Length: 418
Image 1 (spheres, rainbow, N blue to C red):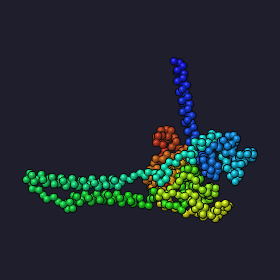
Image 2: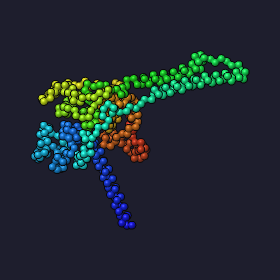
Image 3: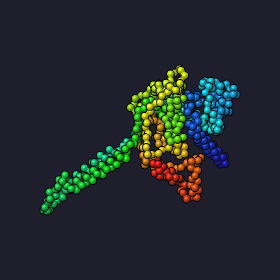
Image 4: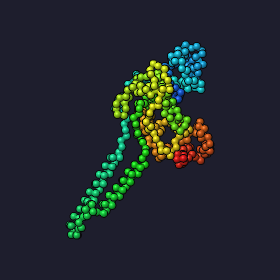
């Protein structure tokens, strides 16, 4: 009996150990993904060579993990040790020094490596939903159906009223009561008044809805001069949004990247070898031909040194517009509010041709301010609101609801209409 209990306890302990180990590995991979996106994704991918080498299996290519740690923290200093692999790597990539990451801890580097090893190799995995038929299902609009049902019910109601009038006439004839001739529909004041009210309500609703939507561009998806796929860059290659849109965390505008930013990678990447791409019309897109269009704007000839002074701006078609009387600051949302890009722009990492995800209406923005919690932790922008911390501790403010943007003036007119 005692032996069986001991075995049971040992089994439970082993089970809990393996469960905790699996959760810790999953957590490390998740943390590693965030660290990889923030520090590595602009130059590296797990299974594809970009500005730097593919990182899958990187530990096996180094003589020791300590050397890999030293290389990541300060590659320039490590080169002076004379390590053969490091110097060969440096020469292979045209003696371009890797960025230094002195603040990364061993545990953080291990988390990045865990994430890299958890990413499956796309060249060995079957491609699901390939082709134009893989387009996402669009949620059906039931407005037309509801309108037809309403019209049918209105016709049925009118028929029932007419039937009721005829039955009343038959009943009066049977009892010998004089019956008045029914008034035709087009001369019946009650019917005319009812139809007038219905038309007024429906017309007013449609007019108001149209006026409120005037100037909005939800689902606007123009054709661009170059087919730039966010699904390839931000999705497959996991390039951080702020590598291209540098102004998002620094100022009002997110900014469109210059040709020079594109050429940081595409001086080396001159051919597209990824999964097939399709535009919204279902036509296949030649990724390599689109890269050649970029070269034309850049004034770049393959095999020759590139002169950036020959580049000319790409005439991108603007998608997102706000009225002139509305103030919106990207840095205030991205850095201070720590709002993810996808909140406003949708799943941008899955889009081929970009479209406007939401209507960007005042109601949409105000509702977000009413529901979004203020990010107090590690955020100096809101240090002046220390009293809210005290109110949360004392219970004066319900801690489960937190501090919404509305509480700090997020719904005041002057915040946007200054």
